[in-house]
Length: 169
Image (cartoon, rainbow, N blue to C red; front, side):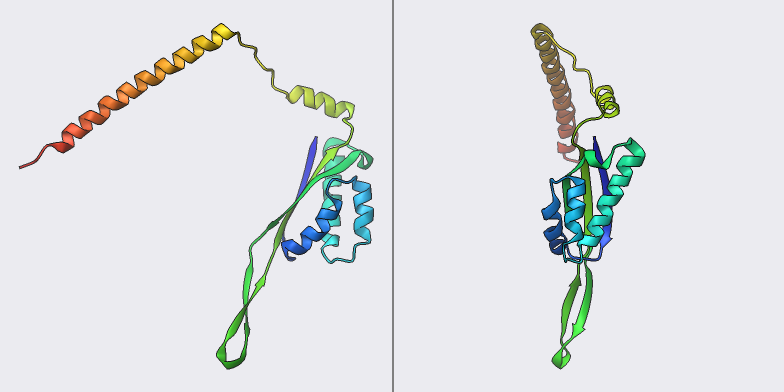
């Protein structure tokens, strides 16, 4: 079972946020939250909030305990960039790019609970076994249908060519 939470338009650059998210990727949620508490980066606080939001989603929507969760992946993508200008000497201006980030956290169960296992079995698609003879017959039919379609397509194209190739006087 995968639980996701997203945070869009965070007003911190993606490179700065990736420094923090790479430290906790693949760890248990409780261990990651404890580690983020002591990281002296400004981007650690929004990451903690996002992970807590994903944990709340897991508890309320799927009844999964926090001890049974680990961080499968944290993706940090760039958001829109705000362009500002700083005046300089002799009438010049230099650009200031204020970057934003989009964060996505994907949590995963370490051990499937009974409810999750039932859901997983229910959601799996039954695979139909096909004999070799049936597969060959289906392949022949598809080749035949393709040949008929190509023939019809070729005839339609030739009539078009004939119509438009006549000289009008």
